[in-house]
Each structure stands twice: as structure tokens, then as C-alpha cells.
Length: 384
Image 1 (cartoon, rainbow, N blue to C red):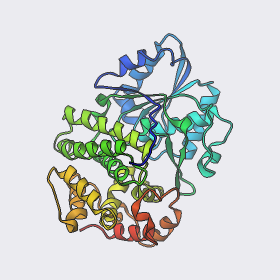
Image 2: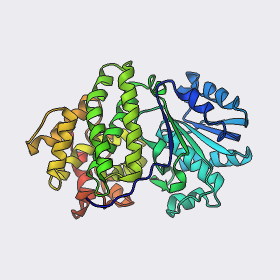
Image 3: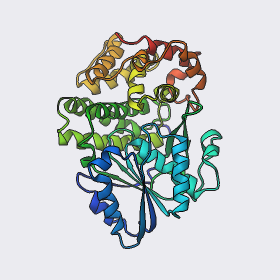
Image 4: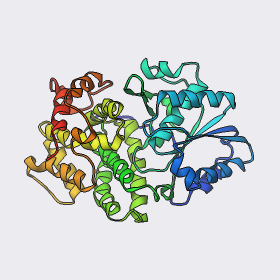
């Protein structure tokens, strides 16, 4: 067995309807001025943002709670910069990210921008890690998908240059994650399926990653099996509270895997795709995924067979059907299976391929020459 390390620095509160109890157990951390970063719209409409703000405000050591809510589904550098300016003006001491992955990623980036001397552009373009003076972050997810509440990354988009990239570093780990599935119970169908597929993508990619350990692979196997059971149940009934809670739990587990095993090529390829199409992260992964599996099976066939067995609940030995099984699972959720469905034109594939960045060496498939453009081409014509 190869040696490995594990890092889970975030304190976790998990449970349905646990969030108020969790907030008040954190009164020693909740001091001074708070910036509440949220994607807003539906959460404000449903009263969740006001309820959370009021609960934070009654904590004994809290002076003021400021809401910052103009965050897009793909958080933009300009939005983060606006949040940093507001946070500095309000002399913010702690940042709370409340929403999907976009709100939590924006919260982490804003906390870094307020608390460190580096500009957000330095962190985004130069790969500089945020300093230890990054403000503490409390992450409260309202979707079951990204695992951002336990990861050390903030994924942002420069909408002017059409570049999507990540700010990463140990200082970005949230101090606390409050994972309460009650917030996911009003999430609409499309978002539920897209974020749910993101959980599956995290599980499969971290399972195949060359940085995986026995521990992260154990979490992946449990997650793949759980998603195979409970995400289709949500496709039938969005009011299935047991399925909501199970998906929140495995989404949280995959946050652990993101920090310890990372992901593979689909996540790297999704960043330019998302920047050019402004499509959601989950939809982009779905459009890329079966083309990737079809190529990956040449390198790790036994692991792909295990993935399909866990996902479908029945053993399979037929290698030629593995990618098709994934494709049909994606289609059953109403998600795209090709880049054309996201409006990508064939001429864009070359530009996107040139913009893929970051470490791709964790993927067994990355050894294949020209694989990035090849995968984009396969995914572009993937729908069957």
C-alpha cells in the first residue's frame, strides 16, 4: 500500500434542521462584522436569507450582518471584487457563504481578497496561494453537489476574457461547514439533477485519480452506490426528503475527496466549456462524461467496471457497454450528453482545448497524446 496523507481541517455539522443549533454553537467564532455571501434570488424569496441573517445577528458577539447577493451561477471576478470592496468598507471579520457552490466559492475568494495583501487577479492568474490571513469562512450549502464546503478551491470566471480558473490553497478551507439538507428541498428539478451529477463526477473521478488513497476510494464507492439509488428517486419525486438527505451527505463526502484525491480530465475540460457557454458546471460535466469514460476504459477497465456495478447495482463484465451505461444514466436525468446540446460549435473546440490548464496528471488517460482535443471532439458528437 502506498503512503498517503489526509487533511480534513473543516469542522462539520450535518443533519436535517440542524442549522440553527449549529449557528449558536459557534458563537465564539461569530464575532464582529459578518458578510453573508449568497446567490440570493430564490433563497431571498423563500425567506431563508432573512432567517439566517436574523439568527446570526442575535449571536452575542456579532455587531453587524451585511448581505452580498449579486453572485452568478458561475461566479465572476468582477462580482468577487465588488464583494471584497464591500467587505473592506464594512470592516468584515468573517464571511458566511450561503448557497450553491457559486456562493461558497465566491465567499472563499472574497475572504481571501479582504484578508490578504494579494489582489484577486494575482490569485486567479498567477496561481498564488491565499495567505493565512484569509478571513475565516463558514460554508452553508443549499444544493447537494459541489462539495465546496469542504474543499480548498474557489472556482471563478473572468467573463471578459472568457477564462474559468481556480484559486486554491490551504487557507481557503472553510473553518466550519453546516450541511443541512432542508435547504435543498426546494431546489428545482434541473438544478437538482445537475448538482447531483456533479456528486457522481466527483466520486468517479476521485476514484480513478492517481492521487486516490484507500480511504478516498472507499468514500467514492459508497457515493457512487448512493447516487445510483437516490438521484433517480429525486428524478421521480423532488419531495423525497430521505433522498435529499442522502445526496447532501455524499456531496459532503466528496468535498473530502476533492481536497485529498482531486479530480480527472472532465473537470479540467469543463472550465473552458463553462467560460465559453456560461453553462452550469454539472451540465458541462454531463456533456463530457460518457466520451471520457469511453476512452478511460482502455486504461483502467476493471475500475470502470466496478463503477458501473456500483452505480447500477448489478455486476457487468461487458467492457463495450460501460460508456453507454453512463450515457443512458445521464439521459435518464434529463441532462445533456453532447457539447452540441450546450450550443458549442465545432470551431470552438480548438480554442477550448488550448485553454485547458492545471494539473491533468492525476488522470490515467492524460498520458495519451492529444487527448484533450480528442475528448472535446468525441463529446461534441456524443449524443446518440
